[in-house]
Image (tube, rainbow, N blue to C red; front, side):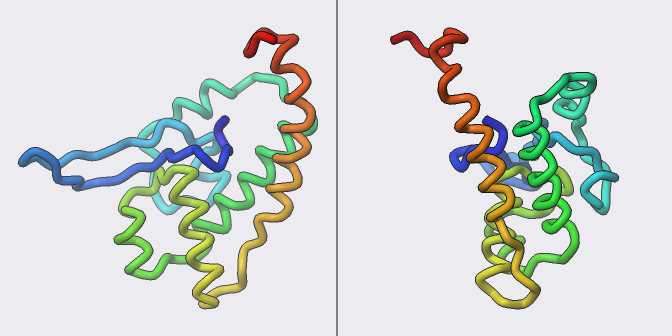
Length: 143
């Protein structure tokens, strides 16, 4: 799932491998730059376009709304240089992994007011509880 804790989506520029420089584009941002206050354009709007016009349940809407709040908190303050370097925060189209890890680092530093993950976690838990019984009935897993 897009906001699962095991989601390791990220973006980065200037990764060195095999004698070449590589860039990784994050295609899995469910928000526009304007919605989250990004300073520059995201290279991909794949997920925004994919989600456009879809109808979501109230719990899914709550997860998206709380996720948007976290992305906005990420863009509201610059990250310390060691965090930027460690998480490769050199592109605007950061991934969910980078957003949550950068916010956790800020919370630990005490340099800015902490960002609470609790509203997001509560919304995610409610959506999880709604979806768990459907895993078998919708055929994702067999009994």
